[in-house]
Image (cartoon, rainbow, N blue to C red; front, top):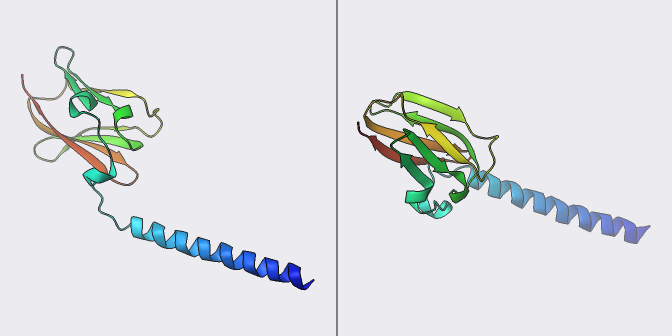
Length: 128
């Protein structure tokens, strides 16, 4: 009976220690800044991740070249007003997302690709 009790005590102690250390690392990660540090993700060659098709007025965004799972996309105009938004969480990671820009006026815009841990920002300029 003694060896069984000893084994269960050691097993419980190891399990508890593992759970405590896992919780502390999660709490440290949650204190990170909301924007991605370039070292935290890899964006493929920028010319292939974001591609503008001027003829069809569509911005293509290649999710496969972004190393995080995305939750939503938001587009802001120069004044900081939200002009477009869409949910992305249910799309496959190898999606090429088509962002229609035909209804946007010429000017500067900011595209925010949001994940559950941060934001990837891309500035774009639309001309006539």
